Length: 241
Length: 105
Image (cartoon, rainbow over the protein chains, first blue to last red):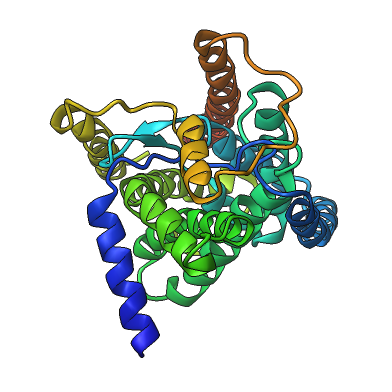
């Protein structure tokens, strides 16, 4: 209890005292020490492999899904390329992985996310090769899993709200994981991992909230359009719609 | 495509635009800088002795080149999304056309 109060007060004070911190999305090249880089690679690899298998199985069962999967990957491409201004006076970008997690489950998104992150790491010097494992884990595994479960729990109550909350929470969670990854690799000299974490979290949380809302709304729009054309596309997401 | 759905989606899209544009209007002093570079400062503050042990293999030659590549990324995504909805929409209209022809005959 005491610990929690301490955490909350320090979080709030950091939020108030350090409005000038700015943060991007992915962890930059070389900014994770080698052991952590290897750790996140090892953790992400099985998800990517199983994700790849899930995709090929899905395609075999229904070839029409290929077009649909390309669509959700295209959504990741476009959303993660848009650096948007936020209330903190800095920019960050959404992830776009929530949509695919809702439609295909979380595992295939590990592959989609990997493609986009590779593109950005190799050509844009955004993110990095050494930090690829960590970035795949936050954006293409952890975020999609949250989106998937939020959608699963809420979808029978109100589908639009479920889609919105799934995409928005997956987006936010991605950044929470990135903060954890950075805090673990760079603990504060005095206060340790927890202080680092509050620092990184406070940067992420505020910057990302409006962007998570934006991603949620955009996902609702495109999901709505996808559902409205399901007969022509040869896929089935919702019956009786 | 019913009108109600289109209106609703357009309204939702307007909300997104407002959400993204309002920081630009209200935070006149802010730099809105490319955030990644400044992330290094946070780490440097926490961990002053840390030296990045690996550098990007290729770095965009300038900010312009970087935004070019980001636009290419967005264009690939947008291009495919446009293709997809054009495809299913075309399919829908041909289907309804042939349906109405059959009804006439």
